[in-house]
Image 1 (tube, helix red, strand yellow):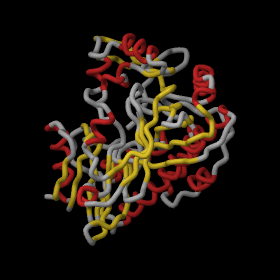
Image 2: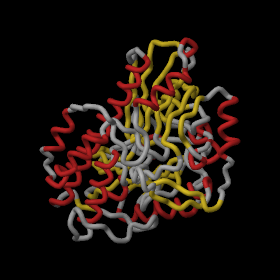
Image 3: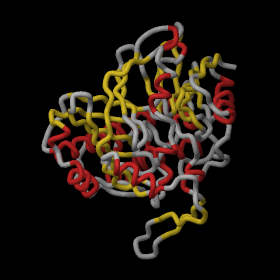
Image 4: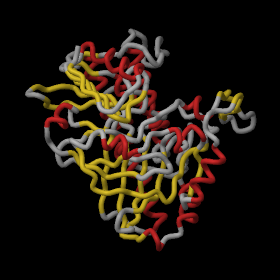
Length: 402
């Protein structure tokens, strides 16, 4: 069993997930924003010497955040108009295509991928490059302590990463890349591949390519928002939190699997978002005993306190006959009064586009609380106040969210 370090107060099921994944690991960490995920908990980091985990990285390979500071002052911009334009030009939600003519070097790399099954995902990758997706994925406008305007985004590798992940879960069971894997329940044991094998190396290559795709997508969306604003970036912070890195810890090399967990090595900055009604931060890691015990990892967000069903109620997914899109029909209400939540956001001057009860502020912990639990390994460089939040509507199902 691994040496386990825990921040905050996780529930029993989340801790049990980490312990199950840590059976063949040397070190494991649970950050203060942790909650139950598929197999490996979100907010978990696990160090294996020669193993890598497709279930640990998860379905949204290389999901991450990017923030860009602009020279604009927030008081000088028309936030409602800008949010309208952002949602007009950028696609949010399941299966959405960008509608842009996109030529990016990552698309050529997918077309000639070393792991050949990824090549047939080229059209999907091209169509979805520059889309944001659903769930807790967003585009934000924010203001820092000096009143400067920032752009923040959070999303991952979309359908390309999702199909890559599900394909390897099938391959790990001796099936083909296109088959459906069995036992994909939330508390399934970790899927582990030996990186000294052909299949393990293939996953490393395929995961890395999905990471490059996710980075390209976030770059494109931030670039598009800056164009809408008619400005440029004066500083950028870009990081991902669903990935596996080869790293040196305690004198040995490990594969560190982070799911919903931000790398925070000494001097490394990260953009971490709160709920739609909470501030976000630019943080920076620093060295010390606590940082080393955390495998230089920290939170990736505020952390959920209730499931989507608890928040939004029981819903049945339907299909619109005319558009073919899937949408949610509420069967029984949840704990969140979404209309009241929207009124509260509006009263605080936050322009919301999209969203739903399953992403309301009441679903999440306060970001400052989870950051406080990591005070011994990170420092806050900027606190960013929310001005506008754009997300997919809550009645759109997105299988690519984390």
